[in-house]
Image (tube, rainbow, N blue to C red; front, side, top):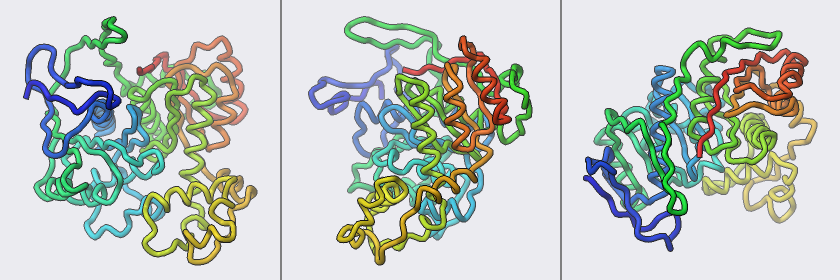
Length: 394
């Protein structure tokens, strides 16, 4: 297939729309089900690059959940604790979760609100266990190098047969030069082929704490690779092989750090005993349950706990999670790694990151206030590496 006509572009008024190979060659994609659109393909192709790099960097199967050309979550197939299996709502799957299914559960589960209606990318063959997890989520489609017959059957039946299933040629490698047009003007640049697996990333450590354990180095690689395919400005918090908070597309670096930190805090708060034991009414819709959890955790908890409202969600009115309980619980989160797609201009980013358990940082360096950033890291015994690498993505 050399060309594929699309229903429309980013919006219904943007017609005609198509994807094709500029050199007249074959597309590296096969549509196995559904009718993917313009934004679906943007998410699919960016997501595929991300998981391919994560797999190459870590040697583990990788997955990402993409939404509007930025990842909502990304993870590798490290085993999950029972707590994570429960908060990701995958503890009831009868089949054992394979490494690729585990990677998907982690990627989807980190920020379930942002992943609603996502496009999934997998580094490895989609198997039956992964397809069963995907089957019950609201999602637009999936891209993977292959699908088992059982998985393909499950996915082809999703959304009454309209679910988008794309098979990517894993051996395809694009031209080193990429182009796009804006307002009739053609932009051309070399593809971002920067190697984010080299030990040189940690060759410049200006902080007093210079200790980066193997797990932290892996998590920082995951953060930086994720940022490589996240709309800038962007910041990514990672713990135990998965992104737990991604702040994308903000004009201010501190707003990236705050947004991603808030998401990391929500991820951690979902593991609080009060949250894990919320008495939901039977058959509550998954989206309603996820939204209720987010509200319950927040300062707006009365929106689901007030008399006349809680009955829609719970069998009995749960006790609210107090501000003191939230602060005490968040303070227990440690060992978090933080990557930034460019330098931190001020130490306020480190102050905010510290409140979400960050102990390891990788950022480009080069701010006129680097001294203040280093000083703030030293204040909290945070180890920070200056990578010298900027990862803007637009």
